[in-house]
Structure formats: structure tokens, C-alpha cells
Length: 197
Image (cartoon, rainbow, N blue to C red; front, side, top):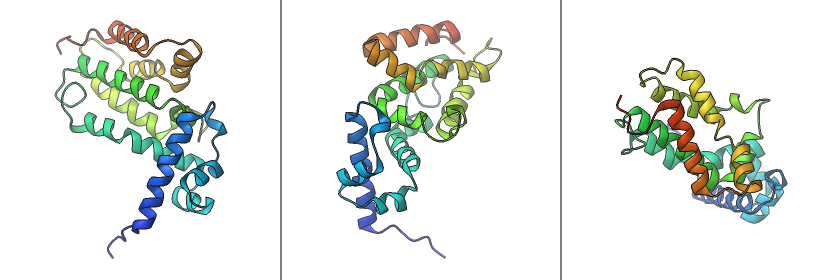
């Protein structure tokens, strides 16, 4: 039996909900202050529409995160250098971690909300597994790096949403300073971005 396509009004409602949630998370002081009722009101839909479409607040946050991350995922899967396949591994590791940092700077409260939902540990979340396995596969191509699995975990710890929020928000570090600091740290672990494989 062919899969039913979502109705046009359901697609419009979904986009309105994601756009409203995006605006609310971007404008909030604390991500936990954004409620399903707030999102429904901002999107002009009933709360029931949110629960039917996303299950719960965690499901909505995950859907929004995935929608905003999709261009980055596509660039990593089949885009050009420096994120795409075929890029030398050290350069690609630098680009991947810079992409994570920039994404979390651009979507700070959404990233905080996502890392604060679900399981007891953010390391058990699906999005973390994807970032870790993607980075680990790149690091495994580097000569002389004995434990790519651990190195991927350690490097991703430098771009956790709570750390990015602390440094950018409370410590008032500029985007440029954060990117430069991360690049220097990644160079100490994996070498410079121009390191030959």
C-alpha cells in the first residue's frame, strides 16, 4: 500500500510550528522557558496539533534541530571541500568541528534545549552518535592517532552547547576568538588542517 502524503495544511502547520519554535528559542533567556503552549500560540495552532505532529516537547526540539542541521549534514555527506568527502582528514576534522561550533553559536538556545532533553546523558542522544561516528571515521584516516574513538569524544566535548553558551554568553568571547581557540586545540590533537594523510 503506498505511503500517504501529508496534507498541505499539515505541512504548512509543521513549518509554522518549526518557524515559531525557532524564533522563540532564539529570543529566550533560558530554553526551558519555552513551552509547548508558547509555541502553539506563536504558530497560530492548537496545542493538540503540536502533540499530534511531534509527540512532545523533546520531539519538537529534535525535529527543529534536524531541520536546521540538514544543510550541514548534506554538506558533510556529499558537499565540496572542506566538509565533504575527499577532503584530507586533518582538514576535514578541523572543518567538522568548526561547523559544529558555528551551528551551536547560531542556534545556542536550541542546542542547549536539545542537550537538556531525553535520556540521562547527552552522549546517548541520536544527534551525538551521528556527530561522534562522523568525526571518528575522519580521525581513523589520520596516521599516528591511536584512539580515534576517544579523540572524537574529547574533541566534541570542546563544542558542547553548555560550554559554548558559557564562553559566548557569560564570558563574552567573540565568535572569532572561539573559532580560533577551537582551531588551535584541534591542531594540537590532530595536526594542522594542511597535514597530509
